Amino acid sequence: MDYSFAPGSTPQDGRARRMFNRRADTTLIRANGRRNTVRQFIRHIATSGSITRPVDDHLIATHANSQGFLFIALFQGQNGATRYETIQSAIDEPSKSIEIDDATIGYSAGDPITKAFHIKGCNIGRATPFLHKLKEALGDHVHVTAPKHFHYLFWLSRLGIFEGLSYEFNINRPTPFATRADVLSAFQSGGFSFYDGSAIPNNEWNGWLPRRLSTNELKRRTRKSRALRITLGTSVGQTNTLQADIGFRVTPNRFTYTIEYPNPGAVPGDTAGREAALNNTLNNDDTFDSSHDYPTYERWGYSSMADFIAGYTWTFAKNGNKLICRGRRYEYTVLPPIVDVSTGHFIFNFYPNSGSSHSPITNLQVTDNQFFETV
Image 1: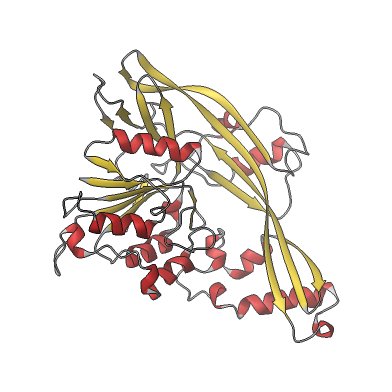
Image 2: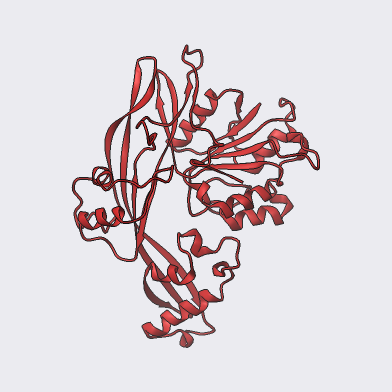
C-alpha cells in the first residue's frame, strides 16, 4: 500500500487529495492540527497501529518550483518554504529529522532500493541538487521522483481526475520587452525543445503567445490564458477531449541582498562603489561559491555568479550601516500543455471516481525521464 499526503489549502491541493483518493492501492493521510508537516506524515506511517508495515511508496503533493522550493513544511516551527538549507537542518537536527525508518519500508543493509518518495509539484524535478539532498534527509533508502514540468490536475466531477503536465518555457532578463514581436523573436530563438528533444517550430510560438501584448503588460505582473481543446486519443465515457489552457505570464521579480558595515560612514556612497561591494561580497558568500552543491545563482537559472549579477538591474539604498542591494528582473513564461509529439494527443493519467465503470489510465509514468527526474 502507498501512503499520500497533501496538507495544503489551495484548489490544487484539493485536486491532489481527490487524485490520491482515487489512485489504486493508495491511502490518503489527512492533515490535521497534529499532523501537517512531512515529518509528522512520515512518523505517522512509521508508528500508527492501523498501518501494516512494510509499506510501499510515500507520496506528497504541494506547490513547488524549479528554484528548489517546496511549499510544504518539513517539520514543526519551520519558517517559510522548504529550500536546500531547510533540508540540511532536517539532517543536522534530530528533532527535525524526516528520515524514513528502514523497518517502515522493509529495507535491510545491502538491499537494492525499491521504494520511492514521489513529489507531485511543479518543476521541482529540475532542481536535482535539491532532490539529492532530500533523498539524503529521507535516509538514502528511497528513490525521490518529481516532475520536470508544470504539474497539471483537471477535475471533471462526473468522471474523476486527469493528471498531466504543461511545459514551462522561461526567459529571464534584466529589462522588460517592449513589444509582442520582441517576445516572439526571443522565444523563437531561445533554443527550446519538446520533451523528446525535437525543435519547436517557429509558428507554434505565434499561436502560443497572446494575440495582443501591450508595453504595459510586458513590464508588470500579467496573467493571460487561451482556452483550447486537447484530444485524449481515447474515450472516457463520452469524453474524448479536455478543455485546457495555454498560459502566458509576466512576473517582475526582485532579489534583495543586504551588506552590513561596521558603521554608517563605511557604506559606499557612489554607484560604482556599491556595485563593487555587491560583487565582492557575493564572491565571498559560501552559498554563491561554485563548489557549493547548489549555489544560489544556479537556483535562479544562471551558470555563474557573474551571469547572476548581469541578469538583474541593480539599485542600491543606504539604511544606517546597511547597504540594501535590490536586483530586478522580468520573467516571461509560456505554458502549453504537453501532448504527444507524433499524435498531438494529451499525455495523461486518469483516476476514475469510486464505483465508476471507467478504467484507470496510466500513460504518464514516473519512470519516464522525459517527464520526471529520479534520484
